[in-house]
Amino acid sequence: MKQFYRLQPEKNKYMYFELDAYDLLETLGGDFDITTFGESKKDIWKPVKGKFYSSEDTSILIPDITIWSSNLLILNEKAYDALSDKLSHLGEFLDVTVESTPYYLFNIMNQLDNKVIDNDKTEQALFKGQVVGLKTLGFKADSIKDKNLLFKIDYDNGVDLFCTDEFKSMVENFRLTGLAYHTKLAESPI
Image (cartoon, rainbow, N blue to C red; front, side, top):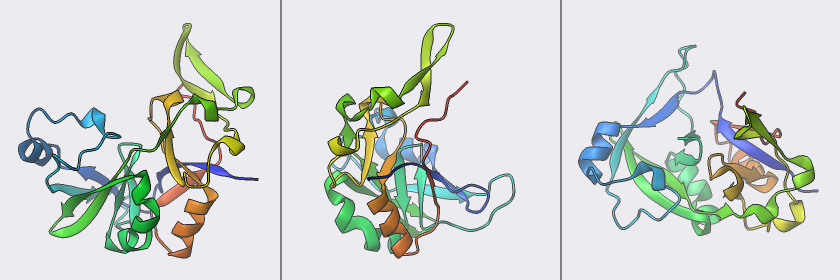
C-alpha cells in the first residue's frame, strides 16, 4: 500500500531558509504577489537572494533540501542535480542565491483536487462553528497516480506539501538532508 507524508523542515538540527523580502520586492517589483506561488513564475522571475538562519537551538547545519513557506522546496546544487529530472513535470525551478551560492526554489504547481480525499479518514477542525483547518486527513491511495511524487491539495488550499514514499526513498538514497516526513497528514491548529 502507498504511504503518504506531510513534509516539513527537519527541526532542531538544520537552519531554516528565508527569502530576502526586501530583495524580492526590489528585484520583482511591488506588483509581485507572493501568494500566487503554485502558478508559473518563470516568465517574470529574476534571481533573488535568500538566507539560512539558526533556530532557537542555534543549529548551524545548512540542509540540502528544505521547505520555505510551508509548500515550496529550496534545494542546493546537490539536491537539484539528484532530483530535478524526477520533479520537473510537477513544477518549475527558480534561481535563488545564498551568499553567492546558487540554490533553486521549486515552485510546485501539482495541486490535486478533492477527489483524492478519503472522507472517512478526514475531519475538519472547527472553532466556534468555523473551519480553521484539519484534525485528520486521509487520501484515497488509488486515486493518486505514481507520477505525483510531490503534491499539494485543493482541500487545504495548497497550504501543506505532501509526498509519496517514492519521493522519500529518492531523498534518502541520495543522502539529502533537511526534510522531516510525517505520517500524520494533518495537524489541528486548535
